Length: 394
Image 1 (tube, helix red, strand yellow):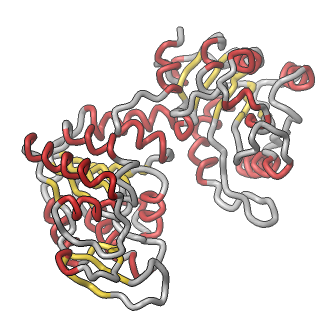
Image 2 (cartoon, helix red, strand yellow):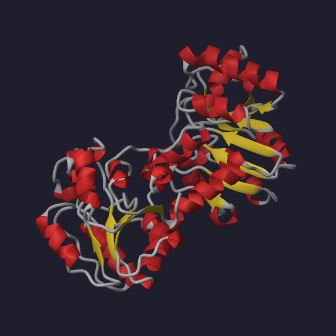
């Protein structure tokens, strides 16, 4: 696929699809601008190279209706402050008034479209809506990795009608690190997979078994594997209908000679909440009234040993209920070991990224993905509609 530096954008109308679905505080102001900051290299490049820049995103879930609570206004204001220049918010994302405003742009001007999801056609990947959006620009740039697994009109249909389509720097970087993670990794390659449910990671586990040299499994999903091994799990979260699936994953790992590391001890409590008595126990001693909510110290040592010779580490999913301090030590301890390793470390978005940032070691990771669902689908071996569209574009 073409990237931004492959395209002449001087004097051109550049439609930049970003993911500015950022959190807002009670006053309606942007409370975390990390996603805006992630797109700044692409935005600044477009301005420096004399583009007429049209920034477009969705915000929240307005369900195809105009809802002032999901207006892009606070996002446009934050981008304006970051750039030190006006970023007017247009009243819609298509239509005559929008077209007139864009026709009046000069090189280095920046405008933002109103929430794309105010139109139901966006999430329906409506071809006519995609064509209307494409009519606004000379060059389409996708820098929204985090939504590139969604076949939305501004991600997929629009590309079919845009005169030129390419990837922005963030999307290009995400795909580069994905290749480093799974397609052409330095070995040994070790994957850490955590989170609550096996059901959300089945595709990931099956795909990883054909690629990794070692597999570490933690988080609540490990409980289902314990049950597959005949270990009692008390009141811990278990997906009973996936116990056979977990057993099959372990059997497949043995057939492929891929070592699988599971917790050997856990931190338990009668409920997943703060201010409850906690107990550390070997996994074989989880009580009938216990919930396993974090990995124990012996497991941290075991997992750290598995990482010692790693050349590449891919991590998706926390290893405990890290948002509660009493159950955060396992995940945060492993962050320390990954941070001090000499491996290329690539971390999936969402909760895993949040845990790494909580540890204060985010700057010690090689890369933290900006897309939770999109990163997971890549790890599952799936193609992303937004990337496929760019690869097919002329």
